[in-house]
Image (cartoon, rainbow, N blue to C red; front, side):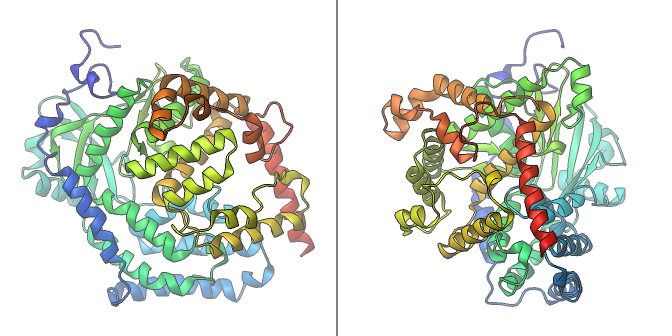
Length: 530
């Protein structure tokens, strides 16, 4: 721990105790008009998706060629061998095609790879291989982008600049550097021409997606046009690093105001931020997936997990702002147990109407009110506004409690197929913010297995609810117009029913894995019989 007085910007953000500079938002030269720029970005992507005109023909031909070849080879081969072999083969061929099609498609694959529970497991497993398959840009190209954006030579700004990137992702890559003024920083540099390529690719995707409806089994749940719309809405803000820098300040502020100092955010530089370059404080830590190193450093991994759950929930519930892309590459843990959040290109933002709907969704989950949850999902955009919720409740059989481990393989398949068919019939879709939230919860679910495999999940859910209710229950009840006692009710039996574990008193991650293995084996038995 550094000596000396704490940095004054800790009053407005959850940062390190002593920073390389002090964050003063009003004096940051890149911040004017950032809200207007965000609105412009959101208004831009629908134009990319207009299907009334042909997209760039060269790009379309390449996409159709790659995807078409993947589908054709699957169609004459593995398609006839039945699931899940057929799904694995198709997922592999699509992953290879996406890799050849370049950064935009790799980014789409990376987003799908974080959708465990939302997309077929074969597709998720294959697309995870795209996370580290992006070759870096040449240093000459990196230098050119930095100098064009900052309006100065690299040597005028930086005393040193590592030629080899720390990480190379689909949109940008990150280099370690030291400023002429002595501060150690990291520099995020956007790939040359990526904005044009993303626009052209989304135009091509949008034209192609309607022709894939019903033709790709692994995409049946995803609904290709809806998935492309979700992808476009997500990626458009990543193309302007000034928006990402503002996301950093906003999430740091939320963490400070909720007193969640166990999670910290790097400071963006006061002046060295442009559309394609983002200079920020350099922070080090233990990789999220290196649990052994955490424990060797004396880090309480259960406390790390609990702090992450609470801060994530509070940001969404109280402020409608949360990091939208939690995964192992975006998190580090410092020896003092604090978690460093990184990469704020994808950030969930709920307007006030959606935040209220989100609160109702969580409230309905904790007190077992299924109709309230359906209404909240409708208000979040998961169902059309005129949906008859009573019909949804009845048709989906939401009055039933089903333990999947008690079903045969044939019954499991029938339940899933029936549910999928009914949801699609009601026009169900995955709104961006809801999908980001669910994707993060899936990541945190997996984190329990690594950081706290013997943690009682039911007890942890109740503890998180109790902590948030004690700290914020009165405010949340007032916002919802409910009696605090009603708003803060917690029905553990309803939680168990939703998780398909009625009658269980304690549930660890190991228990969950055993139950999932039972389900997997039953699907495998059905495949062998087929």
